[in-house]
Image: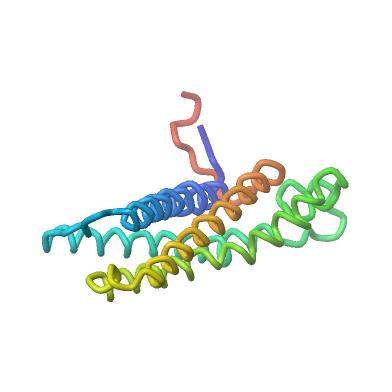
Amino acid sequence: MEISLRALITLIHGMLFGAFFVMATYGLVVELYRSVYAEQPLKLTPQGDSRERLYLICMVGLGWAAVLTGAYVSYPWYRAVPPAGVTDLALYPRFLLKSSAVTAGWHDLGMEWKEHVAWIAPIAVTMVAYVLTRYRLSIREHPQVRTAILVFAVVALGAAGVAGFFGAMLNKYAPVNGGPTIHLRGKGQ
């Protein structure tokens, strides 16, 4: 088994950072929604408070890791311009997509949405995590703030879902390949 370095980094970007961010954000949305209808606010021990804070920090970190690796590592490979005379566009995903009317929409709609909407997710979830960490004890007394936090968490989940969907579809039609080959098992096995 083998994988190119670029494909591995794209896999880490999408399946590790992105997918775990979506799962963590979904867990946050469910917990926030549950807390709106709870009769009694959840009382956490100091250790529980620390773990909740760690969860929020890790979630924010995953969101920013996904967006930053996508924007500054994978995206330049996606937009690479082929040298004059190159007919095999496999190493130039943007041009590969745009070379066919059937796949051009994946770039025109998919990548344009992905490269802009994806930034909303970590921005929104950073705000949510900050407010939950800083004002955790007084949020229960302010239903409008609770609702706003829930809305921002849902927006972050939606933005991450849109970016993840388009990323998966774009990678299906025009994967980011190239770079050194990494052998996951020895040659000939």
